[in-house]
View (cartoon, rainbow, N blue to C red):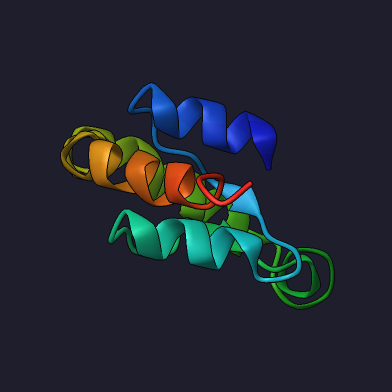
Length: 86
């Protein structure tokens, strides 16, 4: 998760194996379509989905990068707001 956040802070799109709904929320902040796969799908149902996910990421890298950059400041502000009351 932390590596994914670090990548997004640099405008780099990421593909992830998700857990506990955390990546879903992160992607919503950037208005990105899901670039993740659930472990059940990866290990039980269809291993080809991971390959498709990576191909999609590569093919649309610039588009994803532009979306990330356009939302980055507002997302950082949301996360900073979590700490203002501490």
